[in-house]
Image (tube, rainbow, N blue to C red; front, side, top):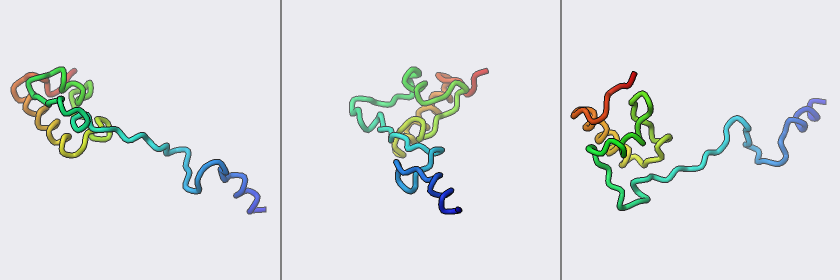
Length: 92
């Protein structure tokens, strides 16, 4: 009887490690690596707004899709832009 319940729950269409709660996300490609002409500049606020959220926080790598090297460059550029008041620290 216990074997029947286990076979009913098992999803035969997927692998053994299939879990419907956790879907595999498509890996994002780093914008800065893929486009060699794209140069990150701390003076260009429109360019940096793609990497910050509506509250002014820097988006993480999983959201931006940037590699570790370029995420550090993004962080540094955003902090420089904040320091010279091109981008606000927070928005209300």
